[in-house]
Image: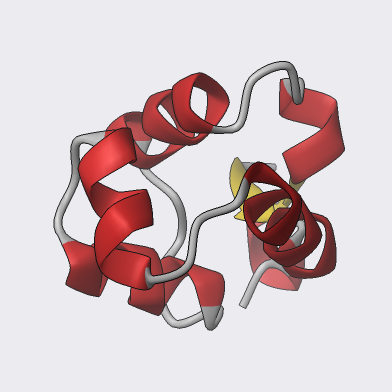
Length: 78
């Protein structure tokens, strides 16, 4: 069965707030990705890709992968 990575939206939102990011634009710049990608992933519209995952871990350090993401069977992720 295929799997995918899903953002833990509540944990992500809390970590962003605690890190002091005041806008999606500021967060996206820190992550090195486009603002629309941050918005779409954080709303559950898009699955996080490698650039989003890596950017999140860099911008929200010391948060770890398991704090912000979960691996789920593909049919449950949608």
